[in-house]
Length: 173
Image 1 (cartoon, rainbow, N blue to C red):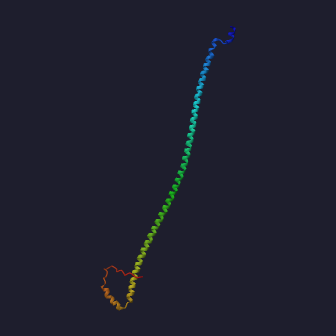
Image 2 (tube, rainbow, N blue to C red):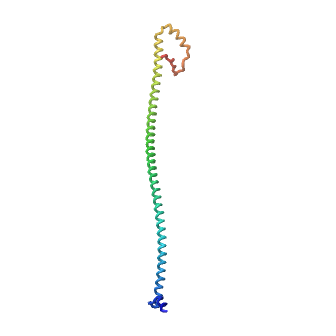
């Protein structure tokens, strides 16, 4: 039997003391479980944070690309607007110049038309005066016998009403 006793480990601890380390062991296991749960939660939270950060980074890059595209589009539109405004100003200036030229030409046309009317009136008067002079010259050169024959013929002509002038026959000049 002595051999059996030797196989058994001897307990050098008192009986009441064995429950204390078992409680500590339980407590340590519970702490380990809590720490594992917290670690799992922290790992899960970190993964979520990393995913959110990567999505935020992608969204930021996309927004940045869109802003750059919009900025470029804004530059193009601003350039087109400036070009349209300068083109509009240029066209307005050309239109104003054309209207001023038209007004100038109209005034010149009116002046020349009035001058032409005045000259036509003067030429008409000169033609009438020339015809009267030619008639007077012809009558002065004719012998008196021809004038006597012309006198009865002139008496039979229809005379114009009082105050109306007889128009001279057109000259062959």
